Image (cartoon, rainbow, N blue to C red):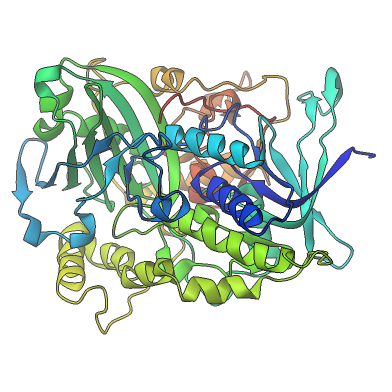
Length: 550
């Protein structure tokens, strides 16, 4: 197919903190060196920030490097953390508040800010455009462009106006080739193209497999009398009896709290529903004391890459680089990935600009300088010091893993003499349905707990209905013949948006129904499906959630 094409020096896939930081730094360096650069950012969301979901307590370390005058420029960091409360929830009613000395110091948040990362990214996009970056929201990068020598030469945006049957509709518009000397992949966790690149260039050879969690978030308006602006609350323990994870409740500005839970996706019980565990959590007195009488205004969910240092792939390949959560740079010990994603983007920009300073440089090289710069950076040091955090939780559980991590972080500064690893893939940890007890979740009360469909409604999720399904089954027989028979088809429960349903056919048989319209792009199905039979690909650009300030 003949496609229109545009040529740039650098194409960046994803307008999250990593991608936008890369773009801003590139243009800053170009201006400082009086050099012209053409840089574009493509974003699958309808606008910058529409697909951004993060807790978020934000460490401004990388932002201080990128824009030291961020406060004067109006960056939306308006709520400094004032206090940290950490609880161990013993059951549905009891909790113990832990003193600071008994918790890892990496979880202390002095100097950090409670933010909407969606709004931070909108602000970063404004800075990028002022510096001369072209930002294209509503365009999904669907394919990788390869040069004749096998190096990456850019991306192709997705075709628009293709029907569910694969036919061209009246609205058909072919995707465009965006060619580049270097392409930066900043798609976030379990990136559709990043996954392909890791396989193509064997970037994860010799590494522990990446590990993931599913993170939920709701925004609530609460009574002013219950609001304590700047308070950060974290919990471990209940309701998770057979899974590793923890919850959070952050008091943001304007009498709002941000509440959620993160559950590691290596859990064994196929009957578990992460969504319903979250709904149960909100009835605990520690959470209920703030939420009761309030109003839920937003909902969303997103997978999180938690493998850390041991799971980092080689981030460079001929013609490009993986940054941020596409590579898995989140610091599990801090439960933070935004500052690390931004720093990886700054390092990528510096490495790319160094070779583009040569006007004759045609691109397509492996940016080996990036690997060395990464190893010399505080990002490498921070991730190295937290290398044992996740494996300790997986091996020893929440309580004893937490005790180990408190000892390592507070006494040894992350430099204990042991190197723990978890070399088991998350999806392989799921057990058979017959070997695990079913879980009866209480019905939602419509005040603190809710159902999936009313939750998805708050995410403003929308897709063009007549388009190819972006949740592709490699083998259509597997959901019933294997997943239902062995695991009671766990997609019905691990999906946080009600996308997957087992329904009865007119012939009295079972079939898997995929409600792709509901998909909030969390990528959990791509990760947790026990047979790895689901391949998440990008839908038409602008499809998916439209988060206003998550």
